[in-house]
Image (cartoon, one colour):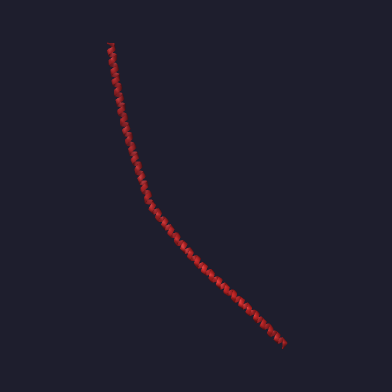
Length: 131
């Protein structure tokens, strides 16, 4: 009978130890499930954040494209304006050169006429002196 009691006592002790081990395993399993749920919530939150960032990035890229598109006509207009200014300045320069050339030609003719007149006057004076 003592050996049966010892066996029962050992079995009860083993059962108690196994129940404690089972409770510990259940607590670990619960903690693991809780961590898994927390990890899943974090992954979901991070995926949401990534999605939001990608949307914002797309919006920013679109806005940048719109700004560049809006600037392009302004830059083209400025370029046309400067080209026109250069064209006008070049035309004015051509006209100024033509005016200068005409004035120089007129002065050259006036100088030549004065020299001829002076030469004729000198010839007359020389002719008068020889007489």
